[in-house]
Amino acid sequence: MEKIWLKSYPPGVPAEIDATSYDSVSQMLEESFREHSGKRAFVCMGKSLTYGELDAMSRRLGAWFQSKGLASGARIAIMMPNVLQYPVVIAAILRAGYVVVNVNPLYTPRELEHQLKDSGAEAIVLLENFAATLQAVVSRTAVKHVVVASMGDLMGVKGVIVNFVVRRVKKMVPAWNLPGHVKFNEALATGARQPFAPARLSRSDIAFLQYTGGTTGVAKGATLTHGNIVANVLQSAAWHEPAHALHADVEQIINVFALPLYHIYALTVCFLLTVRSGGLGILIPNPRDIGGMIKQLQGYPINTFPAVNTLYNAMLNHPDFGKLDFSKLLVANAGGMAVQDAVARRWFERTHVPIIEGYGLSETSPSAVCNPVTATEYSGTIGLPLPSTEVSIRDDNDNPVPVGQPGEICIRGPQVMAGYWNRPDETAKVMTADGFFKSGDIGVMDERGYFKIIDRKKDMILVSGFNVYPNEIEDVVAQHPGVFEVAAVGVPDEHSGEAVKLVIVKKDAALTEADILAFCKTQLTGYKRPKIVEFRSELPKTNVGKILRRELRGDIALTSTATPCTPVAAERHG
Image (tube, rainbow, N blue to C red; front, side, top):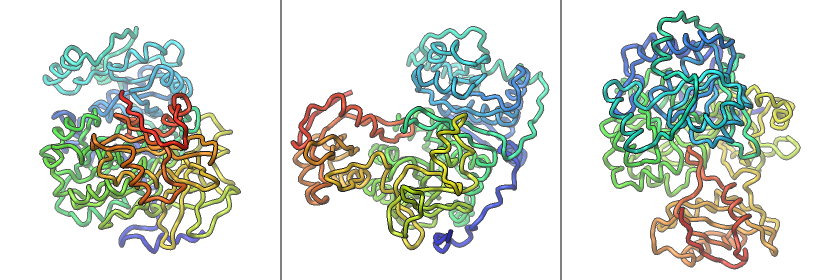
């Protein structure tokens, strides 16, 4: 296929990357540990680890895992927020020849049980705050080895105070009992006395089982090989290089880890990309505490800031945002959900650096498409395919459509997963005969090779035979000065099949349903205008900050008593 997007590449960005330059993620990590041993690698709540310390600790924990007789390729789960132990555990698992299974620490027992059973995890490392969840299900899983960490494990004397506050003052650790568990620091100490055998790995060996959010049904594990992850790190590094080249005065890249490391976006674009360059990662355990996050970031000249639209929006609306140092900001990445134009404009006004929106999925390790980092303004597109990546817009019969026509975004490249873990039937559904992954997202490519997301297939609203895309409606409504956040969903309508419903969180308490409807009348054609407006105190989101439209649709199906053709407003709390 013709790669017309190459003509839009910034100077210096290659059309292809050499994905064979590393045999494994472990080899990449070890190279960085050697070259940057004296540099700080991560900092969390004022305490830091150097690359040398990360090297030593991960070897010790890797030796502990090996001493338990776990076979090469065994799955080990991690259930923690962004704390200093997380990079240690990831490096230990990979270097010892095992497979990382990242787990959302806020999972319910049911969700955790499914993921542990599906992956066949034999060991887990988790923060004590979530031990009660594991206790409820561990007997029904294959987990035989449990390592329990506490927030202050790697913080020295300060850690004693941190643990006291977490356990006794904030009462964030529910009572738990896991017979036979080992404490994190104890595992490190025992592993220091054990031999460590670095695993010999190839690009085809599995590195991560990265579970999808389950938006299309039961959560599935995307099987990501060492080759997949290495390729995506190298693709992302090549894409970011022009920004770094413009700021040669920055000796060590400072990257903010506000997105959780169990999410593929943070795992690759934050953790691995930062480690490969010898950068410093600022770990934010709780990004929902915007004030606390800003306090942790004060004093650091931030260079890269990966986030999602909701996080950018929340930061911009916080009174302490002006205390942050963005004078050396190189790149503000965005992914996970569509960036709203109103948010992008405000970010640029405050930082003078545009939000660089990209696109990818767990199944693509994740980055597939991104705007050039040399952009001087927000484009409203997801950008261009990364080096060594092909993107094809296809119809329902898997045939490519002409430039400018909408269709399903399909991706081929070295970052595309090997398949869904133990689900060949599900894998077959999402792969084309010529090796493209079918994203389930509807998009369009212009004549310059730039791609734009229209929406997910299943989120599309069908009003009297016309397609209505929620992202478009949300982008318009978000520009109203009284709106803080908005989601658009389809609800049943006896006249038009479906109607548009808005769920809004107010910025201005005086905002009314009539204000919104009047605004939409000036911005949207008739069939796109909302018929129902509901106000809430918050919108349901994933831990990454993506708005869960499916939960709103579920709410509507269960609780809506409004007549879809009659605009109503209901104030909800909680």
